[in-house]
Length: 134
Ligand code: TYD
Image 1 (cartoon, rainbow, N blue to C red):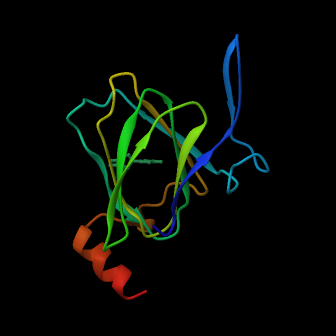
Image 2 (tube, rainbow, N blue to C red):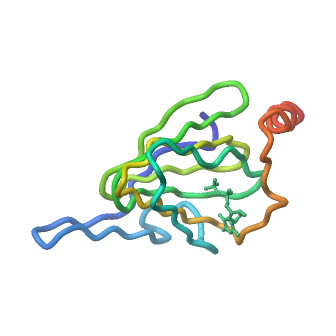
């Protein structure tokens, strides 16, 4: 699917544990301007339900696991996110919903811009219509 792909962040694992690095030139596809994380999500909750017009994000479970439905307006896929250094890139015009959060899940999101509600499309029909006009 366009604007969605898995990526592996630089990671160093040894007997002392795991070190994961999000750094330009070492796997990060853009310069970050915002970091946020989602945690303590009840197992039956779905979040997201939006797409962005411009924002690029990299999502990584720094603890636990979750699933993400990604949808380009015609095709929907489910992606599992877990594992040391394993991350998911989500770019513009990808409707996404996060679910199946494990109890210990901490979903870290690295974004290329600050929060801007005007960049959000929060209505699925509006999203499909806007995608069709592109
Ligand atoms: P929301 O988009 O509903 O979260 P999710 O995509 O995980 O379902 O965001 C929840 C609230 O937090 C909403 O009022 C917008 C606000 N918010 C910020 O103020 N800054 C941010 O960087 C983010 C991601 C959300």
